[in-house]
Length: 118
Image (cartoon, rainbow, N blue to C red; front, top):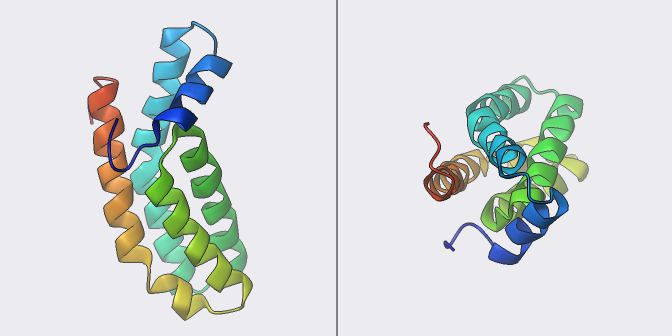
């Protein structure tokens, strides 16, 4: 698979969607194409700061990352989410560059696997 995508989680998602390859592809496409807007929305929320908005975006990132098997994205977002829950917005914001890095890598890997245009 790849260093950023966990095969078992991705297979589970694809199995849950049945044999509908187009639906599977569309879900992965949405994850890839929403990545930049989610990461920008998170960066804005952390800079403002708006802890509630950051919480919502991190939940979205974490759940969708889990579904597509983007384990490094989910782990980084979880670390940021933990800091945010502890009231440490600056601590959460310190990891935004790493989140963007692993997010871009996961999106690249998924786009390659599903032959998506980025």
